[in-house]
Length: 462
Image (cartoon, rainbow, N blue to C red; front, side):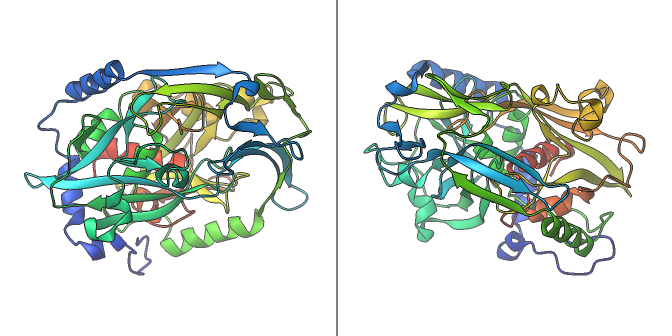
């Protein structure tokens, strides 16, 4: 990652492992030959049709193996595993501008595996994608990584079936690792949650299964243009396929990292887990835990049936946001190089400040605020004329923990009037190459920004 006069070596770990990887990734991204995208949609529809899927809201009292702990009111599983729903007290920043609040949060300390298996066919990298059901996803079944499993899942705490293809991501002798990074998840609803994002290349034969299909990166990019088709975990993993492009950037690497270090040092995130019972501002009813002003999100309970999962029936809590989100990058071309406007985001569940989208919010939760208090650049992103919208699609968030959590993902061309180079504190123009390089490291690029980076690669090309 080099930039604007900075001569330090690019930390392109993948390139050192395989100097041909950028070319191979670019070739896969350009490959649409073979199975048409319409046929992939037909396959997904067929998997929905042949499977048996249902999700039903239930009162908390009908949760099986889940209960509210008498001492804390936390929502816990009888095994002590999977995850818990607890209270969180958050303080961000220093006086006098410190922000404080309390909220329910999902605590899931174990690290899961999000892994995609790749192999060359006809000289083109293909990625083994899964048609996977998640209870919170619109349409339930979406295109997912080869393996998407929590530690409790793949160690069979639920006494279910084995996770298919898991061995490629737990046994180093089964393939060559192309990408392997511990990445954060939604800091607004998870407390310090991380998953191992992996891409592993294999050359040997791989057993076929009707719920899995080999696709080129070009086909996946095309599917990203369709609403609620490629799930969050697949987007997160594929964003780690770093391909260098240009050494120029408005701000050098040293300047960028210094700016982020300064934001982190002046915006500490202090979070403390507290009892869910009696959490100020939140009320527990029979069917949900709600904010007193009906804002932000609520916690609900569901009963799930799925014929193609490790177990075919279970119940669990889910977090349900109040309204559709907006997640956007403003972009500008500077000296011929694509740049995006990132925000240094401090979220209650983060370990540290991360680079996030220009805009990330639920407009319904801000509608009561005066215009001056609305999120920066929200108006620019949501009122842009069609000629400036380079990308727009609805994508769901993590369907295993969130119910109907959908955001409009946007990439919008900006000009000097909308987004000058001299931006407000907490924002920074960085090149696409710089952002891509930082996905190789933990706690630098948020999960929403990783999705937008992948979408930017869809419209810009690899």
